[in-house]
Amino acid sequence: MSLSHIVLSSGRSITLTKLQMSSVYAGMLEGYPCKRINDFQVSGLQRQAERAYPSLPVHLVPPVRGYPDQSAGAFGPVEVLPSVGCIGVFGSTAVAPELDPVPHRSALIVVWFQPTPDVPSGEDADPALRSIHWEELAQDYEL
Image 1 (tube, helix red, strand yellow):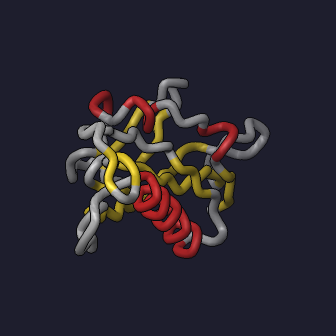
Image 2 (cartoon, rainbow, N blue to C red; image 1 turned 30 degrees about the horizontal axis):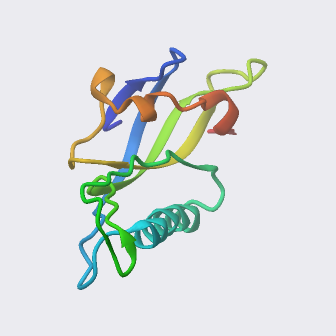
């Protein structure tokens, strides 16, 4: 059973079968969000996905970074990420056309950031998420 279906910009239909969400700044006790902290958050979430799914390719959708305050503190200007970090397991039909479609599928682990803790679905999914180049990034496997 899938959590949701998304149609990519390419027209390919993919399903979300597992989703992990976390608050980006939940453990931040002092300081403020800045480029250095955010780079650490982004790379940390990507490494977490790579460790959790070592046999599958992991793709990071680069997050949109906001700059709400132009004044710079000790660590540079304030820079904020969308507040929810996501790791999703997506599946679809096989990428290679020569594979038998019955026993073969394709998979991709995607890391992305979004402003709310909603499950991405259909046309409401973030355009950056929908623009994934599945054929270049996903890996085929046999059931």
